[in-house]
Amino acid sequence: MTPYLLLVNRTHPLTPDYIPQDLEEPRIPFQAPPGCPKRLLRAQAAQAAEELFEKARQQGLSLWGISGYRSYARQRNIYQNSRSSYVAPPGCSEHQTGLALDVSCPAAEFDLTEAFANTREYEFLENYCPMYGFILRYPRGKEKITGYAWEPWHIRFVTKIPALYLSFSNITLEEYHQL
Image (cartoon, rainbow, N blue to C red; front, side, top):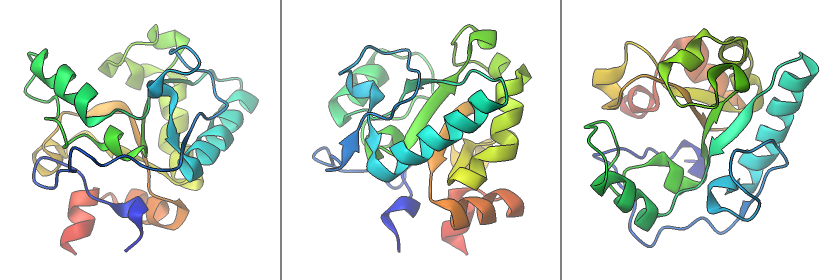
């Protein structure tokens, strides 16, 4: 199975030493300064993000990267300081794979909240993510399956054919892995 379909969640954690070897900074607008690890994605995901963000720009939209790669140690810190039961424990965050990207836009004040779903940028993601190999990873109505709250801002790179299949079949990675 392709590493891009890797299932990471509370029951399928990564080891503390898991670090993708091909991390790079995509050339997209980011809410993190240059050189910050949050700007990193695996190479193929970075290229796809560049293409997706360029398509959004061509349509007069303003997508911004908020958070990409996150190390085990960084996730542990976030988890220990969070009051939310939906924050992933260390090893259980897709961000550690370098394939997940949280996005927002000026219309949502760059926040990672459900308000992002009321923007044209979110509507764009719903329509175009799969064509660039991304899925909206934590969809509304699938919280019991994924174990996480609806996150309209969280996209995950799985490559084009799986993204199209998952999106058009309306299934999550968890459901795909049970097939």
